[in-house]
Each structure stands twice: as structure tokens, then as C-alpha cells.
Image (spheres, rainbow, N blue to C red):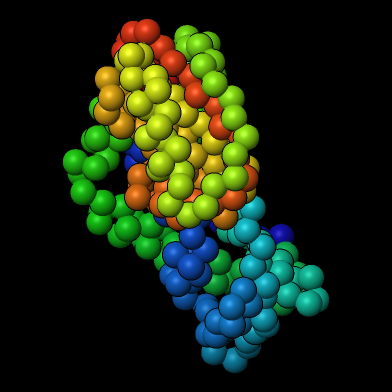
Length: 253
């Protein structure tokens, strides 16, 4: 098996990981892709202009929390190409690629080029993010922290469970439910609402203002409050309250 790795330095690796969760972003920058049919892509590798290998590969994505993304590309003969991104907190993202199977001596020659194109593509995407958006994530905004179980656990330890509910909501009704909850518990400076079921959402309100949003739907993360409008299904909702705004700061520790 032949493998290559490269490190990308970025203070907020979750920016890269969120972008990489969309497989079209990764596939679009692989130079060896010559055809795309839904979840099947055709890859072609050449060496010395005389030798080549091409095959159709199915894409099998795997997401492990917020720290690991793996794209396994596998053809009918079990030839396998893997692209792996690993987040290293406060350091960056490690990108790795490996191949095992037929014509390895041909494919292996092209792995470094694929890795370079992927890392360059990621760096180009990073440059598109406004600096203020990254700064906001690391300072006053709590959305990124709401995506981490460790941070949520700290918040719950300092809060009180006010209500648990099981509801079925149509598109657009999640916001109505949240508005009613905020009105009901408006005397508390901190309100944390979590919903899980067909999709997941986590909201943090401090002194009546929305300070953090995290949504997980169809395997994709979102920190955009407008995406709440597209959620629907059966949810188990928990509402936690806190008596001091300082409680929310524990999730940043």
C-alpha cells in the first residue's frame, strides 16, 4: 500500500472539516476524475505516457465526530483509494491519501499530485472565508462549541433541566417551538435548547439573544440559524436554564 500525507496549518480546523464534509468539494478538486455519475466516479492514472489504469469507484464517506473524515473510493475489484482528513485542535488538519490494489505501481505515482491538489484546493477555500467570520467563531460566538459533546457536557453541569418534550414538527415549526420556549423561560438569562431525532439542533440564548447555533442534518453540519426552517420530523427536546450569563463561558474552557 502506498500512502502520502500533508499538514495544513489553520487555527480553526473545524472550518476545513465542515467544508470537507461535502463530498462534492473534495471530488471536484481531484485531478484524476474524468467522469462523475452520482455517487460513482471514474478515475484515470497514467505513467510514462505508455501505461494507464482507469476504473469506476463508488464513494463511501465516513464521519467520526468532528475530528475525522474518510472518503473511501472502491471499485468492483476491491481496489481502494482512501482520502482521510484529521483535525488537530489549534494546529490544523492532516490530509492523507493511500491506495491498495491493482496497478499500484501506476497509481502510486499519482498520489502526491492528488494530495497536492486537495491541499491546494482546501487552502484556496480557506482564503475565501472572511477573517472576521473566523475571529467571531473563536471569540464571541458559541456555535462551534455547541458542536462538541465535551463543551455541551460542561454547560449541562452548570444548568438546570427545565423541560423535556417529545414532539413531531413540520418544516417551519421548529422556530415556533423555540420562540414559545424563549417566552416561557425569559426570566432566565441563559437558555439552552437541544433537539434530537431525524436531525439535531442546539441553540444557546444569553439575555434573550441567540449566541450559538448548531445543526446536524443528513450528516452535514451547519451554524446558520436560517437552516432551522428546513428541519422537520420527530424530536426529543430538552430545555436547560441558567441563572447567570457567566455559565455559558464554561463551554469555552
